[in-house]
Image 1 (cartoon, each protein chain N blue to C red):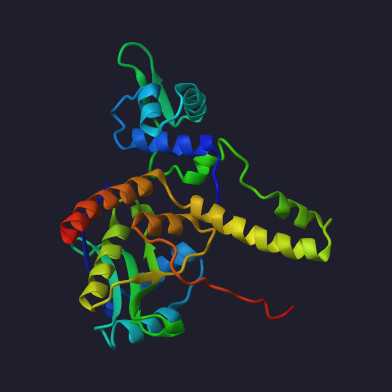
Image 2: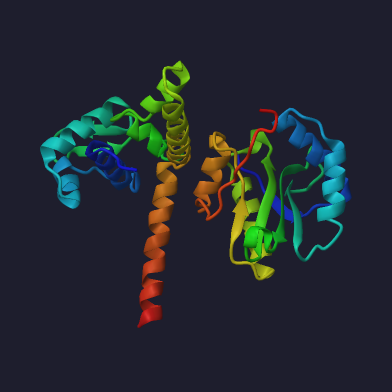
Length: 154
Length: 147
């Protein structure tokens, strides 16, 4: 069943909920990482850094944060003109397929657009079909850069 | 990358039907639209029917309608009904029967195949329909801009 949600900037009181949601989805607890992300992306340079959460209407439930998305404007890395980078994104598994991810994505697109940005980028594990299919359904396509890597212990 | 004709026809037919799941379309109508023989298309539709992606309706005004889940059916799901997508090179490389040069080349070809499969496996019929709709919306805007 779909529910009413609000998309807003993250607050410090959301941190435990965000870290809990991330742990439920990834199976890895990283509270220090989320504290650092909050400090860097929600408390500073907020005209170019965006930490958004989807909150259930009322916001008083056991876990009011149903999803989050974090991104920033990056410029001139690898010669790229300024673009919007999304580097963290998650939706509570039990509330998926209700459009929450789409609302978060659209809100982030609007923030980037307001910041004068015309291109939005992210990176997805090639075999993560869920994430790949989601970003594709939002209109994202392969960009002009390829991620490369090298194993250093060979 | 090239797809076999059957795979392409299957994707075109599914997009035609999934765009309006209530609509029933005859094989000859689809065939006319994409310029292929009803005979060839009938075989494709039969395969799609066995996979549960289309439903055949008999009788006057009958034809095919969409029976799958457009948000869950990927291009790779459809293509794999008609052709092999895993690379022979990758299987050989894993078996370890190759010379060093053959192995190095197979690594490159496997990488390309893997990216192609990941891409096809992430694009659903629903995403394709959205892409088509976006293009249709953009076309009049472009025409106005150039007028």
